[in-house]
Length: 227
Image (cartoon, rainbow, N blue to C red; front, side):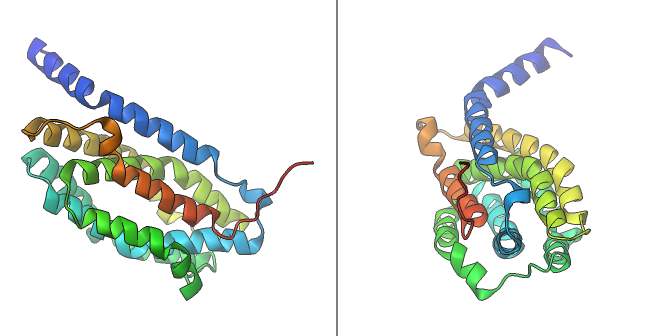
């Protein structure tokens, strides 16, 4: 590694490291809050799969497209375009639908209604096309999905399903996607001429997405207390 490349990598880490550390903690907190699949009822397991499908099947590509429309740097455009191309070429929405069908958890009107308000908040947010905030939200989401997939597969397995293509594909691949999106974030932050706001202000989309994920996982789940 040349000294110049080393300096560039150090600068890249120093610009995004505090944000990435915050994101990692947020993902840890979310995962810690997940209910134990083995303690869920059949209706609760079905609901988690159905609400996740109701949100992701028709919205992930929309969110990523908003990210693509908002960014200005060639690096970020390339990263997001590659992500979108993979989603479309491999029919990831169809892959998710097959997962839900196999688990007998096709979304109903009630499932869509349970997440509607929080999902609409995300739509309003991405509609503002704020590049850094949207890229950061998507980097967070890709990082979360990577670590959520084993849990999601476990919910489906406990529900009697043996269809894991969706979870098998999105576990390892989204590690790369999250890493690449933090590179896109760095490119956008470097390009911006505006003063960078406090980290908490940049996390608006992350906060909205955390709330949406909570409604996916927790809506209809009965709190169980140990004696």
